[in-house]
Length: 91
Image (cartoon, rainbow, N blue to C red; front, side, top):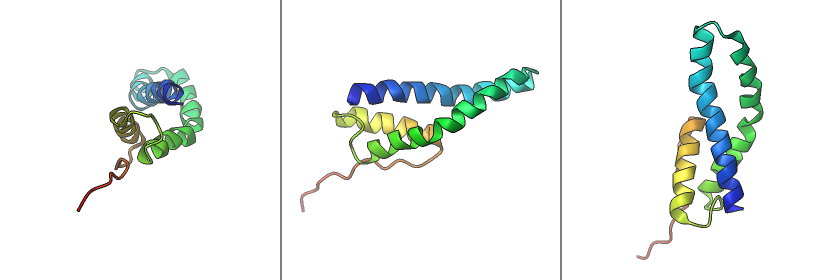
């Protein structure tokens, strides 16, 4: 599932970037058709959070660095904090 999660994360991140950056610019320039991207953004909200949730629990990707980097980027685009999976510590 790591590769599939990465592919889906790229799609979600791309959609978020277009909606959060491109749509306001397009609307400001008079391209009202850009507003049709907003429903796609709304429909992607729950799957986007699901990917962040998987990263928080360390299940997004098998490699810890990939898991935390993807989780952090996705959380930033979701406008939410990210605290990666807890690591075992020795006392």
